[in-house]
Length: 242
Image (cartoon, rainbow, N blue to C red; front, top):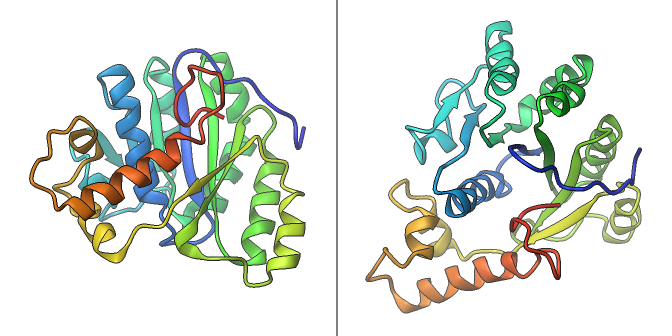
């Protein structure tokens, strides 16, 4: 099925935000994703934080997120079973890089795509590509494990070009993604601001956050507009639908 295009599911969806490397913008994207889902439905999705025991995205959504220990059988059951038991909810899973292989090994072994589809859940995987050829190979391998899930490649401008750019761009076409999203780079000052737990994108978008310096407000709007403009042309789908 590699390379096959898929139609977005109707109803609730599971959105898995992942990478084979850490510190590449994945959690900021997961936060933005969750908040834009809230703007569309007035309710935050359930958010699953796999950075056990401390949590990362949990700091921004303490009341709507669960910290899961994927190294334990109990944690694995809690994650996979709870989603199927509540298929009316949307989910955003912020998957830590060190849990990537473990998570998708379980995912494949229990045929979770089939179980989710039977429960009426759509499934989308957003993979943050890093600069290395190993990251491209990880994306290719992960894409090959999926049969019905949407696969969206995310590239963060802040990470920079591939370390071997010609070969990297050549290998990129082998992934067979459904769609690609480019995340624009934020300045160091803007990044520090949005990483503060007191900041949320919803208040900014709804203009409830007043008194920001003009340069910061302009930069954040450009960041959001660049992502928004990448939505499928001529559709009324979610900003991040594949």
